[in-house]
Length: 171
Image 1 (tube, rainbow, N blue to C red):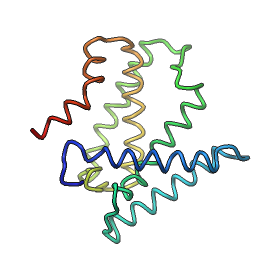
Image 2: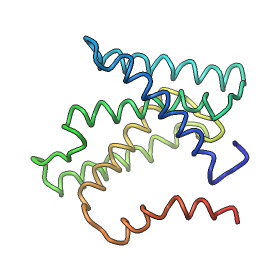
Image 3: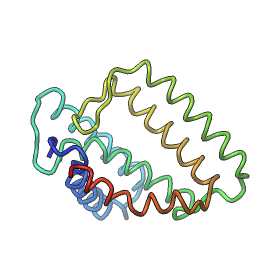
Image 4: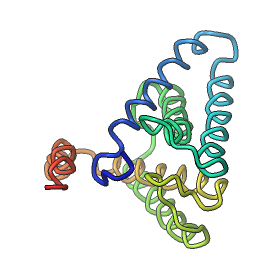
């Protein structure tokens, strides 16, 4: 599905969530489970990177990309679990969230100039450690800004209908 620009992520997201659920169900209730989950996701990240960028093998349902993206899903899951089920940080003011988020986004934009071209759809990551750090930094920034905004009818409408926009993008 690499040829389908707007919808390549659907089978990739499906495969990522299948792998994620299998790993969490197998290892989520054991001792040191968070460390094991993170370690497994790092191992799969390395395997996925090797499959797509060293051996140039393309698996069905974007499994090689799913292994790369699983790390970010796992980081989000573990952060949500640590904060308390997806709750925002109530003791941090909205203005501080916005400032930290904006600074993280600006630093991420500056750092992105030092990395080669990035394309998750084509499994092009440039320097992998810089890509991972920058992706986590920019995600933190977007989360900070979006939690500071809270409710915005226009953004909520676009978010609810973004799948249909991407679906009909090809036509």
